[in-house]
Image 1 (cartoon, helix red, strand yellow):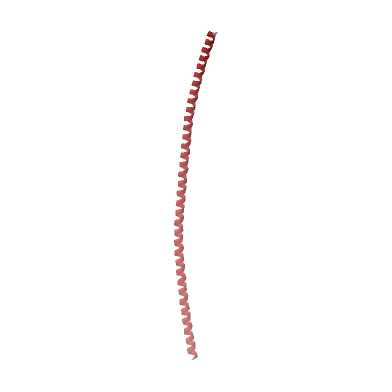
Image 2 (spheres, rainbow, N blue to C red):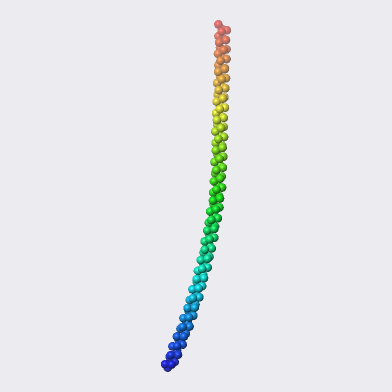
Length: 129
C-alpha cells in the first residue's frame, strides 16, 4: 500500500511538473505573441501618426498657398482701388477746372453784355438829349 501510494505520489508529481512546464511554455508563447502584437500595434500606430502628420502638413501647405493667393488678390484689388481713386481725383480736378473755366466764361460774357447794355443806354440817352 505504501509502495502504491509512493508510486501514485510520484506519478502525481510528474504529471504536475509536466503540466507546469506546459503552462510555462504556453505562458511564454502568449507573452511572446503579446509582445509581437504590441510591436506590430506600435508600428501601425506610428505609421498612422506619420500619415496623419503628413496629411496635416499637406493641408497646412495647401492652406498657406490658398492664403498667399488671397493675399495677392487683395494686393491687386488695393492697387486697383488706388488707381481708381487717382483717376477719380484727377477727374474731379478736371471737372472742377472745367466748371471754373465755364464760370469765368459766363462772367466775362455777362460783363460784356452789361458793357454793351451800358453803351446802348448811354447812346440812347445821348440821342434823347
